[in-house]
Image (tube, rainbow, N blue to C red; front, side, top):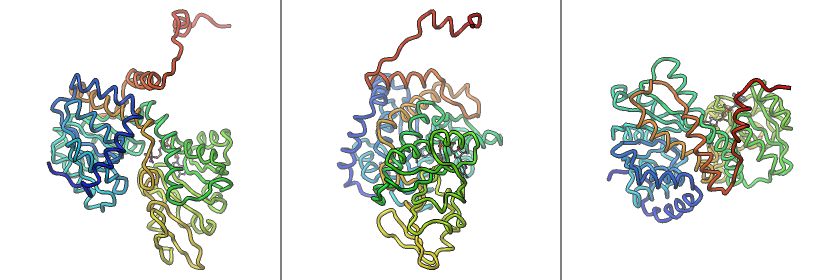
Amino acid sequence: MKHDVTNLKLAAAGQKRIDWAERQMDVLRLIHQRFARQRPLQGVRVACCLHVTTETAVLASTLKAGGAQVVVCASNPLSTQDDTAAALVTYHRIPVFARKGENRAVYYRHLNTALDTKPHLTMDDGADLVSLLHAKRPAQAVSVWGSTEETTTGVVRLRSMERHGVLRFPVIAVNDSKTKHFFDNRYGTGQSTIDGLLRATNVLLAGKTFVVAGYGFCGKGVATRARGMGAHVIVTEVDPVRALEANLDGFQVMSMAQAASHGDIFVTVTGNASVIRPEHVARMKRGAIIGNSGHFDVEIDMPAITRRARRSFVVRPFVRAYEFAGGRTIYLIAEGRLLNLVAAEGHPAAVMDMSFANQALAAEYVVKHHRTLEHRVYTLPEALDQTIARLKLRVLGLTIDTLTLAQRRYLAGWQQGT
Ligand SMILES: NC(=O)c1ccc[n+]([C@@H]2O[C@H](COP(=O)([O-])OP(=O)(O)OC[C@H]3O[C@@H](n4cnc5c(N)ncnc54)[C@H](O)[C@@H]3O)[C@@H](O)[C@H]2O)c1
């Protein structure tokens, strides 16, 4: 079996961590058991371009249990857990093409290798596989039944392809399921961003001024968790409604130009480009820390900032110092790539449980329905979202009420008022 991973000797350690994650992924385990019985993906070739983490390993083995032939490559050059990659190859017999720290050329070689397996279904986190397929291998698009997309930025790119009329197969926007973005983006990114920041820097958050750029689902999570650690949180936004929401949630709201001189720590989670620019860095305090947890490494304009710096050097793993004229230094985490996956382990398994339950059900859905789906971006049917939420409640041992017949009639009617 072909593969390209850093070191197969890491497999045993990786498998222990996969087992640990699996114990917290009860919903996916139930789907795994059903897939093993029903084999809904029998003979289906699936190329997964995802962060190669322990949770992804649990998803890949679930797809395989469903009968799929799975290949895995990384959706980010720095987020691969090399021990997990080794375990997938060694114990799960799933070919993996991913090495932590791979350069851009190797990254794309790995994506191309995954596409060489002629997948019926592709799975993306950021839409790189779909975009590569459309841009460089368009003839292959006809043999793809459909794709699934994990993250906000990927969905934004795919909707743009849909709008421009270039999308060649249907895509399920897994990110848009409520059981994905309400939980993964908010609680997952919230906790794991703080985790990455602390593992990289070990700074005290209490009493610090913490600037969060973007108050979407991820931003809400990061801001809330930073406040929980005792930081004073400032939110920057471009959307007036979300800015108001941040204000009424108790955060200070201001522009980045204003926040720049107040912050000790800055985290971007906007999905947008050049949110922190040289003019902001020029106003920052000596020793300010900047990082990004949005999908791509474009939120902090590092090329422009690097040009203005006198020199840059690594001060500890995942922390690079930029020294400017006069000796003022600021610190960048994880080279501006999503710091929760680069400097920590990404989201906790318990939250990825729901995200990847959505991925597994989306794969099954595409296989069942691809003939009737148009070349558009779809959300999974509400009923599947509800099923995942109910399963999660069940494994958590939580009971909720059921609508009575009278309540259903009341909600469906219009006659009863004051
Ligand atoms: N690190 C992770 O593990 C992880 C997990 C999920 C999503 N993501 C990524 O995080 C990013 C945000 O995702 P989301 O679900 O919160 O998206 P979202 O659309 O809910 O929120 C993004 C927010 O950023 C704001 N924004 C845009 N440009 C801005 C600017 N210049 N300044 C300030 N605010 C700006 C938008 O108005 C919006 O409110 C995306 O790139 C997504 O793919 C990362």
